[in-house]
Length: 130
Image (cartoon, rainbow, N blue to C red; front, side, top):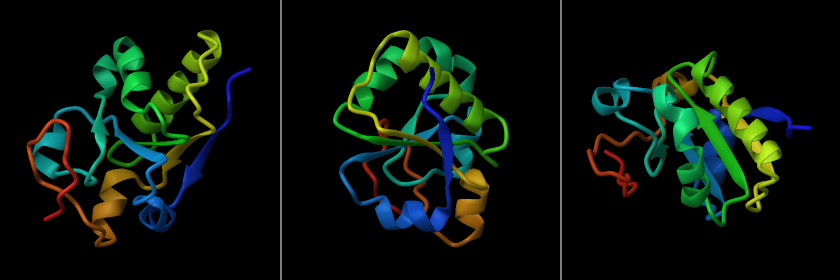
């Protein structure tokens, strides 16, 4: 059975973001490049997400909490989180991942709340906020 996917508030993420065991996965497509992103987040666009899951597992090695988001976390973020959970179950992969979560209100809610965003074009994002 796939792991359950739960939700996390922006405040919860902000307080945990500096922990080395958490990874933030941005599944927005093109809008990441012009809207900005959560500093330090990894980009795995929803339109190619299924094909990139093996790469995602490698990218989050050593993390136990994975937080997905899209613009509003109503469709793409939750869908990718569920797909990832199902993939881990099917592949009998654990990779040390204990929690698969979705950021409530997504990137738009994060930014609207005045939380730090990054506008770098570095891949991967080095985490500098502006």
